[in-house]
Image (cartoon, rainbow, N blue to C red; front, side, top):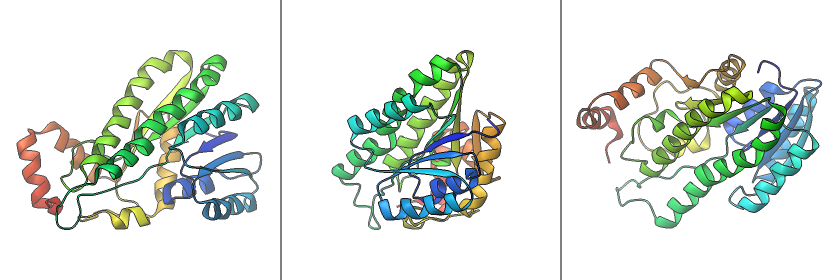
Length: 255
């Protein structure tokens, strides 16, 4: 969808979410922005309003799935979003000494990255399907192609979103609802900085937002960047797993 008039973005106070909000901000556009950090969310909304958009902010934790679903239903009842960017996410890792991920952190990660994402999509779909129009962007990651030993749960959660989005696309296309999976590489952000391992081909969030918008306008099934990192990670999924694991260690992602 080239110029959506009503755009919903979760995780809108983060690097990619905030950059996307600013990218879509324009006169006549209504932005529905969600995040936990109310102060940061208000700052993004103020930037968007200066660009002429109407920005509505909703500060809550997506792990409260019942609240999330009620919110999505209420938003859709007012007017279904033309575009919903399911972007809220978090990351954890095994630690500098390789001690492993704490179970409570793993649970929190899957609640945010997977459970909340699927719950939101499920709540938004009835209105989109009824009017036979709408677009959903699920923000996965290039890490969804092949699991990195330093971030196993994060990779698993992003692989889940990739598979879910690709399946939804096939199901919903005949009903007029477009679904794209967004697979970024490294994008400048506090979350990215906290991730262990090298960060090749690092992009600023504004560049990532432009690439995502261009891909969504073309209704691409996968929007992955940057090249050649996306090409290389795709090969990790294609090659024999043992060989890919050796390549990953050689690239510096071993524990």
